[in-house]
Amino acid sequence: MKRSIAIAGPLLAVLLLPGSGGAQDGRGAAPAGRGGAPASYPPYVRPASTYVPPRTADGQPDISGLYVAIPLPRGIETPLVPMAGRGPNRANSEFSYSLNERPKLPEGAIARPVGVDPPDGKIPLTPEALARRKEIIAKQEKIEYLDGRVLCLAPGVPRTTIAAPVVGYQIFQKPGYVVIFYEQNHLYRTIPLDGRPPLDPNIRKAMGVSRGHWEGNVLVVEVTNFTNNLSNNWVIGAVSATPGVPAESLTTGHGIPHSDQYRVTERYTPIDANTIHYEARIDDPKVFTQPWTIAYYAFARAPKNYVPVEYACFEGNDKNLLLMTNTDVTGVRVAVP
Amino acid sequence: MKPIATIGAAALLAALAGGMAAAVAQAQRGAAPPRPAAATAATYTGPRTPDRKPDLNGIWQVLGTAHWNIEAHSASEGVPAGFGVVEGGTIPYQPSALAKRNENFKNRLTADPLRKCYMPGVPRAMYLPFPFEITQAANHILIAYEFAHATRTIFLDGTPHMEDLDFWMGDARGKWEGDTLVVDTVSLGDKTWFDEAGNFHSDALKVVERFTPIDAAHVAYEATIDDAKVFTRPWKMSMIAYRRLEKNLELLDYECAEHVYEKLFKKPGSTP
Image (cartoon, rainbow over all chains, first blue to last red; front, side, top):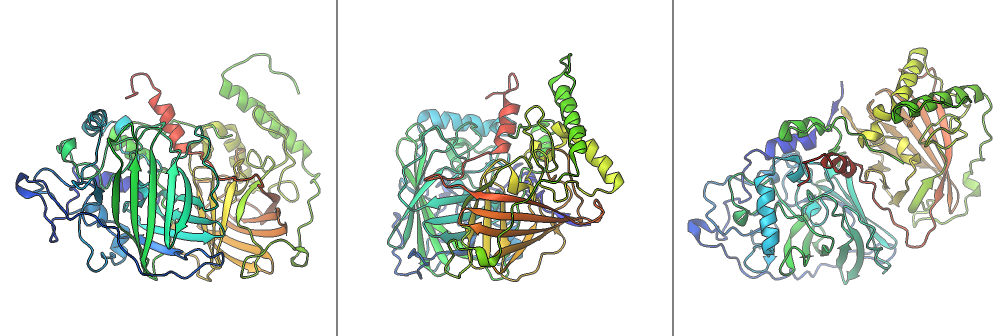
């Protein structure tokens, strides 16, 4: 009998949600903020790339190919409280990587949390958003507060670029477009480069509406029109939040739903033939006191033997939701036109 | 058709109406509609990619009613009538499988895997009432579907099918035969249906699709269905895929899973 991998998503959730390790790796030279002192890292500087990619038939810098996620060396946020006792970052050591060598940071890259601006590495939440975050973290084992990624919802942008249990990315280019197929939950984005106008604000998409252009060899994408019908769709998040850690001390980015004004500016910078650096400026005046930025080495060219496979998340997730939240979704049916 | 005087539960009524539609469809079988002639390699004069293959990049959609019923059927509540897309008119079910199909039909409002927001499988994904987008490279063809953001990656690089895994959208390996893209899909499992009318398959299903471009805006699409556990012989469905030509068109969302949770969270007292 054939195996099915449809339970990959639920399995992940079961493994990670109850009391999983925090996001701090504990290794490396950067300060870890032990003893109560806030961690600090050198100011973020955009990597200067001298690499000139080949060109596609229509003259785009050619970054197409199959990539895997480079594990985050730290979490999302810089911790403000002691991190002693936190285990390794499990989200970055599971699943696909077990079959393949985990790609390493490029030479000279600093192991740091990906939140680089503001320089203190904290997500600049409004007081209301912080209160909301506390509520979500406190109640996260109720389905209404559960992480949307565990519900198998599309995680949006930039969260889909945070290393997930399956880590493959297929980047393709056709005249006038960059197309990204994410192995995670079979998500995709088609990014038009033709300068077309934004969509009507009444049209919302879980992965947002993307408008891209090339600045030299850097792909810049404006993403707007995100859905906000469910507050389970969070801006970002690495592994699941650790129970008992107050919302102010999280390093995972969890528990922050966005508003209808959420927008993201992404920059994909090819560093060499094998590596793409990623930066995302995140703005939502209803949630953040100022725009903030994450940046990290995100994509490494996949090993030759890497094969992306279907990650069926929602299919079969009902047992997982029952187990985790005591909610039975098996009877729910949706109209299809 | 005799009108139903008593209005019962909506689902029951719909089931009854559907049952009558099936009876009508049964009576209409045998008169297969004429098929549009598929283009040959010699006739295609549309755009080509740099490697001289027909350029399929873009957004496409199959029109018609195959999503509701791939066999010929009259209209029923919420279901437009249709000629059917099965060549020869009738699916050659083995007797026990036909009984299973009829059972599926009765239970379709709850049993159709699409209503649980599962991925539609192949070939059903191709003729849902939603557009799909093709991205074409030399060694891969990607298809993104608007429904439930289902995807397929069709490998044209000569690699063999994988073993020991099932996929909702199958394992697709393709090649060009002249100007026709031929895609061989296996490992589809047994959980998807061909349509809302309960037409189904087993895990022995093999699908061979042929995409033959007629011109820049039309592709003749055929799918040969081979499943020795369910049918008495291989059979074929055929239809036309139309290029969507609206300016600045892009795929939108039918995030089916979101609608499951929206329904769930609307229960009294459960909204955060």
